[in-house]
Image 1 (cartoon, rainbow, N blue to C red):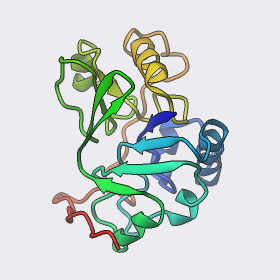
Image 2 (cartoon, helix red, strand yellow):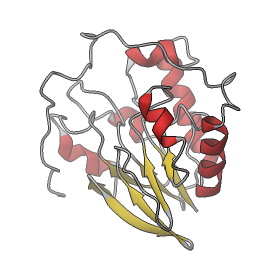
Image 3 (cartoon, rainbow, N blue to C red):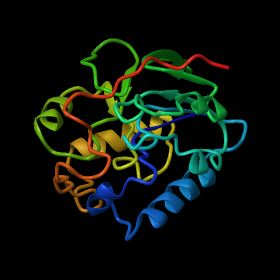
Image 4 (cartoon, helix red, strand yellow):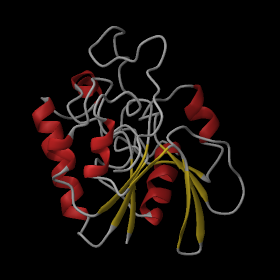
Length: 205
């Protein structure tokens, strides 16, 4: 089985006001539990960016607890790790963009949403569960799917589940369960610097 997820942001306290958790420890435990209740060791999971935050180091303590064969498509919070080579301790591949086939559907994977209308789907993260201009544009593009945990009940999902969750989210059917998040105050720990710390993909050992 193939699963998709994004924007886990392990250990990232500034997201707590927009997520239903009282502490980082509770959030991390819920993400790990939801993952392992869903994914077996034989399953494949594509993480479409932002496993941690712009804090310097790969969140190995959390990633090592996750089941399955994992592939990372890097997000803006994944490109400045001081120990980036350790990503390969947990991921079979690390890329900035990927294309795969999931059954009969062709899939484009990138952390940032790409306008897409052709066969198959474009799967992204990055936007969380905001309701800004991007939301208004993407609700008109049913082949562009948000894999972020905030939209998918904090666990990896299959393609059919992802399609349905996005349909309901953009239709406003999940507003009670997924309210818009508050704005994160600039300058908070982990906030991206004015000039992003973008480093090339580390070589695989």
